[in-house]
Image (cartoon, rainbow, N blue to C red; front, side, top):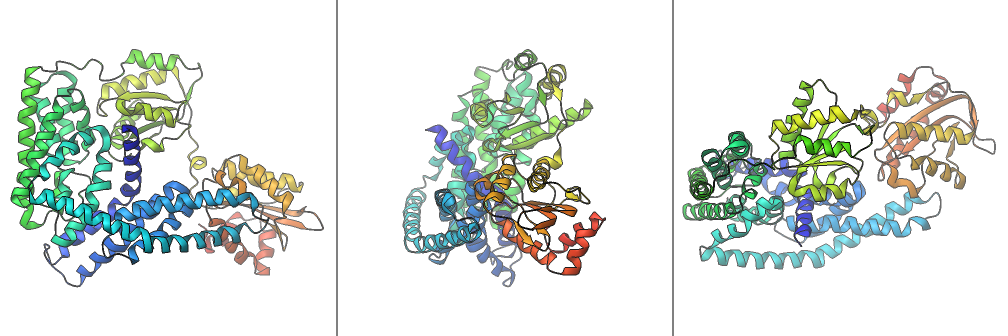
Length: 609
């Protein structure tokens, strides 16, 4: 059950976190230009409504749909969400979180059901019109059914919250919020529940206490201060830097391990959180929008000027209460040293010794729940240590559910290591409790140097920089068979990171069913519909054969243009190619030029890059 809740939290985070800058932009606009803001401006205030009603819900829907089914899923999610927006006068954040993934999931299943039944040559027509008809259906259903249901749910939630507020019991929410945060449900709680309620409350009242319930940095600061005063060894040494990162940087995950190390501290953060909420209620504190990250600076920036002091007082009170309780707990049974806080060097040695003698590492992957806070911090620190050791080993940070399956070495919190192993079962996994321990990283690097072969990553292959790269313009190639020409184009796409290797077979299979020769000495081989999942990035390659390649029945191709279009981007690629070659003089020069820059600049001018 807990794992399902955590998975839901991560998915909600994937919808909201990429668009957090939009929330911040809206919050800044509201804070500054609202009629109750710092500098009221009736003209600029008109920007506030459209952003919160249209832009942010549609961005959330697109992100949710894209997470399920790429760009195609994102588009259908937006179409469905428009039905919700049109039928409601409240911000449809919860609706967007539902319609975005749901629409993408239905489209994905529909595409899988019909893909083997589409006549050759009609893929473009069928996929576009099927998505269009589904979009119409989703919009109508959202408008007539889903929207009203969400409106009813919204009223029920409002009634429940009003009941709690009227009885001054909102502080009891900390019983669930504070432990949930420490168990890595912070993103689910904040972005999935509190933010939608807070935004609606802020629209009605100018600010909302809901934005302060999860983001209050006071309990975490109190825990870290207590460790600094009443602990020894590694925990105490790391507490000051953790305080700076938590309180001023807003990365709350940094204090979670300190609570887990002493379970009795759950009581301290709960009571500290309750005292903060009670203070916020008593003093009438609230924020204009979600502060992200939850640093004291973000809280102050999002606070109305009339409520700024109240916000600061609430944070101070929650810090003080948590600190006092945590001190009593730690003083009673102080932590002298945390022996098993990290996997020690001997364990690193055992991990690598169990692998082949020539085990290769091309990069290190850091993972945390959202992939934006603590993992970014750890990746940055480890990168500096790697450079100090004069090594070339890239370090990337991702969310736990975005760990590449082919990862070599994955570092994550000990509590998340089980889920990390599911994402990359063949990788070496290192579970740690603190992303700030330099000694642990130094031991890890020593083990890598002793037992691993470091291979450089071809970054151009892993992530192409543009749709057409100059290295993929091959001129004056000797005549080959049609199959060899198609295979060569496919290999260029594969070696550049646009497609998986199976896409090449898909190109050959398509040619057997339907010729990709389009006339004027030009052929555009591309994969059949069954291998579209092999496309990682949209791209094209251009190969010139001055003496031509026979595509059968007297069809002679002097220009072979391999295509891989992600989603429906191949439609635009085909249109751009057609426009580029429709002028006979331009086409003739393309067929005979010895200058790759000419073709590169020509396609650039057609809007492909």
